[in-house]
Image (cartoon, rainbow, N blue to C red; front, side):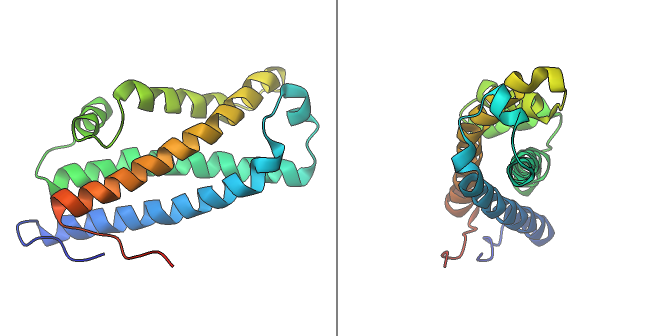
Length: 169
């Protein structure tokens, strides 16, 4: 990443860059999980319960990486972007509304839906296997949305804040 324009607090810029880099690292892991679980999807409750250990581990990695990226974006990246732009983050609702206003997320409702999908597949109750399977299948599309949000955030940082990502290998 290049250094931000001089008008930004260097410490806040460094915090944002560090958070964005961490999100990129997590996103790369999520992409790996998407590739490694593609053969398992779409799932139903019966197939989910009958998965072998390797399939279960791959889905567990996907679940964690999906949740990690969503948490990292909302909890650190978005908040540090607001701080960099000299705006106090406030509540989670305030942060998400600010990201919607900037065009980084489609809408608060879309983000809330991703959160609901995540919550549904994180519960591990045997009697809800079909619900978890459906949520995991939906989460694949959600993962692509999260990756898009990260890309939009990086583009926003390049265009509006003066930060850019180095070319990928």
